[in-house]
Length: 120
Ligand SMILES: [Zn+2]
Image 1 (cartoon, protein in one colour):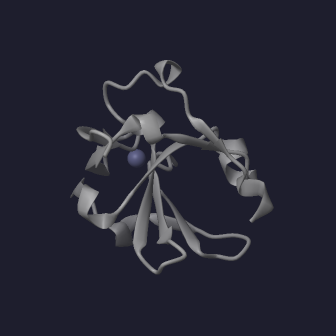
Image 2 (image 1 turned 90 degrees about the horizontal axis):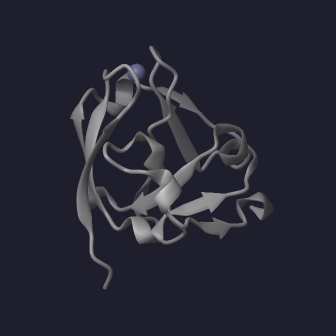
């Protein structure tokens, strides 16, 4: 079992902040249309590993496309998508955390695993 660490993160303006327990060795970089445009590096976690510490999901702007199974959430003030949420094939709620929004993480030191999101 990989080792997880607790990270703090948030959008750019600070309206939304969160804590996440994750192992950044599992980070992914996806080639789907939105990840490409946003330059996302993601870590996927379950709801027990994620907690909003400031703001609520309902205050965030939601964007959906394609099969509309993922809520891409972003801050209506600064426009940063710090995370998204959706359901895994097994029905479990998952959060996709934008690793670039975590404090104290140097994304250039990570080796995100490429994921072929374009085929979905
Ligand atoms: Zn913001």
